[in-house]
Amino acid sequence: MAIQADRELACRFGREYFDGPRTQGYGGYVYDGRWKPVARRMAEHYQLDESARILDVGCAKGFLLHDFMELLPKATLAGLDISEYAVLNAMERVRPLLRVGNAKELPWPDHSFDLVLAINTIHNLQLSECKQALREIQRVSRKHAYVVVDAYRTEAQRQRLLEWILTAKTFLHVEEWKQLFQEAGYSGDYYWFILE
Ligand SMILES: C[S@@+](CC[C@H](N)C(=O)[O-])C[C@H]1O[C@@H](n2cnc3c(N)ncnc32)[C@H](O)[C@@H]1O
Image 1: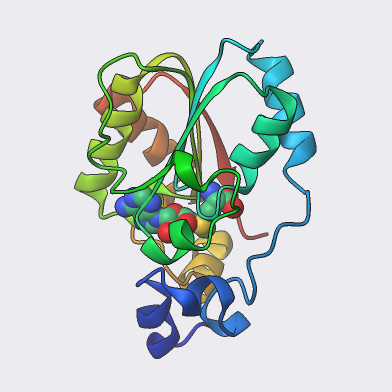
Image 2: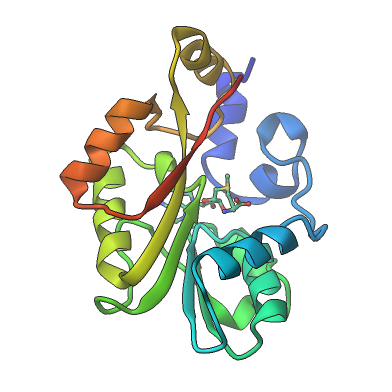
């Protein structure tokens, strides 16, 4: 069970969250290539080529962007994360592509990207801000978007989230998420992070 002091530290998204003890976050957020097949499958699924423009919201140290860079060296890539620590400690090759900022206010014009990703990011905002972030993702996308959020279908899954989540402020039943997507005008793809 996560304890309050660890949650408070984790929510700062500083060194403790990424590279501190496991009770406060990742326990060492280190590149290991696990995103390579994900980048490949996304490129196939969304038919991305070298002309693609891809944004990762909540990109952390830029691991997924790094793998997109290897796959599509000429694509235009960008990342945004609220964590100054993550951006400063990002992989060298992608660091110049990253900005510190908040998902609820994306600093790009409308329809800037072919694919906007937000994997385990927007649930870290309060409900109303989470909706704002979904609107922003929709606004800056001109084709595709994909978000992953903490969710549950059963009371047992909700209880596990309550016990174990460190940073999420909005975790909803999958049907409530779908309702929120609709209210925000979000028409992109989604996937659930469910504690089984
Ligand atoms: C669970 S991590 C996921 C990182 C990466 N997307 C992945 O899947 O490995 C959540 C990330 O969201 C970032 N984050 C949290 N709140 C945010 C916000 N309001 N705007 C942008 N990024 C945020 C954190 O700093 C962290 O890098």
